[in-house]
Each structure stands twice: as structure tokens, then as C-alpha cells.
Length: 398
Image (cartoon, rainbow, N blue to C red; front, side, top):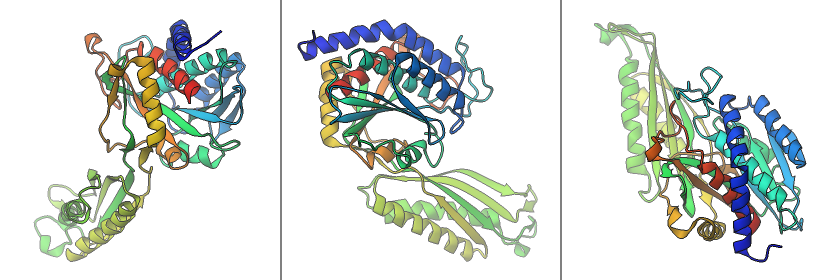
């Protein structure tokens, strides 16, 4: 008979330790068999098989390969959702480990294998204690976090947050900059929106020794990039975090002695204010077009609107922080700064109270320091014990 929070914490920690070998095995299986965004067929099939073994009812093929499962508590009046993403990245793994990716050019380099296995571990624990579970828990295994339009947006459209609507949703993400045993969190605005910018500059090519006969696309495109940087530095309210960066500049044709007819530019715009976001889009288009015109060129600008900014609802987040400290100890809960990276979990945060936190997975003594989205990313697998246990505790205490 569980009589207090201390008893339940002990129970959850004991079960997390008990299930750790199985969850490590699950994580390694998922790591060996990664699948790209919206291609997670085998991953989905594997998770469904695990849920079936646990006797947890689920619906599959949501937004493609997404899964929604439910653990019934003592009351259906309240539901809390826990989410894990499923997709991998187009990266060739360089780690020499027994669980190295078996799929050429594809790797779980962002830790989604950890997210899935941790959520399955939390499901095992919650399923064991469901007689003491005051509310129901919805488990969301989501495809396509790494690719527009984002699997979160599609799952929301297909009812992942309905019937009934959860009171809150919580997710965790690996964080190699934090040592295993710690978690990081920030209340309020946390991560930026992210939009993709594609610019095509069109001029008149010709011999580089006779620029007077050309409309120089290289020069025009270069000036467009310089001019666009003034949007953030001179048009933005300095209190609103914003980043405008360009990572790709390619000519269609061209050589040391040839000015090309066309140049393609690709970049990203990120911010944390929706009004400024839309205004900046208009300024980017206008500035690029007018700058090209000044050089006699033309340009076509396409902005693909991506994920919104992510906000950790303050009341929910404070409750999460309090329960993290109860579970892990105050010194193991770290305040995090704003990040200009993006996450499609932000779509959920625009609909219901949401909290997104970081799970420490690094271990300097073991040489586990590589960051996400690199071919040498890996984790200290001891973090899985905290990953599953903490999620189970937060779901229990909501």
C-alpha cells in the first residue's frame, strides 16, 4: 500500500532500475534500425508490438506512422499527455559500437531512440501502478519531427489532443551538454520559430572579363545577403530574439571566367514573436526584390513557414520543476537559457499547456560529449533510468 509521495518515488525508482536492462535493449534496437521522417514504418510496428505485450490499448497509423496509446487511471476526468518523437536523421554514423546504425546514411543522431525507449519505460511503470494512478495518461509516439510540416501539426489535425483534450502535455529531449543525473528546464518562452528562405536571383550571364555585358547575379546575390542582415539589426525590436542566417549560396552554372545566369540562396529566419515574424517575412521579400532590381536583376523569394515558437506554460512548468526537485534533488534541476533552435513540439504548446525539458545524457568521464546532429552522437545509457522514471513521476503527479 502506497501511503505517500516518498513511497511512490521509491516505487517508481525501483521499477525504473528494474526495467533499465530492457529499456537499454529497446533503445539499442531502435538505434540499429533508424528511419527518416515520415518513413517510420518498422519503428511504429516495433513500438506497437511492445505496447501489445504490455496490454496497453493504442491506435496506430495516426498522421502516417504515429501511435496514440492510453493508460487508464482511476479517473477519466483528467488526462496528461507524454510525447516522444520517432524519426532519425540523414547522417552516416561513425560510432564503433555494437548497436551502430545498420542503415547506411541514416542515424538516430538527435536522440529520438532515447525518447521512444524512455516513453516505453514510463509506460511500463505507469501500467504497473495504474491502480494508484489518479488520472489517465496518453502516450504520443510522433513521426516526422525533423521535417516540415512537422509530425506534431499533423497529429494535432488528426485528433491527438482530443477526446478528451489533455490538460497538459510534457516531453523531454536529450541534452549532451548536461551530465547524466541532471535535467534542464526553462519557464515561458524557450525555443524559436523557424522558417526556411529560398531566393533565386536571375540575371544575364556572360564572360567574366566583360561584366558590362552582363547582369551580375553573384554580385546581386551577395548584396541581397548583406542587405537582408539589416532587417534584424535595424527593423527588429531589440527585445525580441531574432536570427537571420544563410547557409547555402549556389550558382547555376558559372566558373572562374563565367558569370552565371542564376544564383540560389537558402537560409533560415527564427524569432519568438508572431507579429514580428510575419512583418519580417514581408521585409525579406521586399528587400531582396528591390536590391536585385537595383542591380538590374530579378529575384523570386519563397518563405516556407515552419514551426512556431515554443512556450513552456509557466504554471505547469513550475509544477514540473517542483516535482523534478522532489524526484532528483534540487541541485540536479538546472535553469536553461533561451534557444534559437526549434522543435515541432511547439505546435502542441500553441494548443494546450505544455512543458518541454532537457534530459542530461552526457558523461565526460566516459568520453560521451558529442552534440546532437553529429555522426558521433551517443548517450550515457544510465540516463534512460532517469528518462523513464521522471516521466512516470510527472505523469503520476500532474
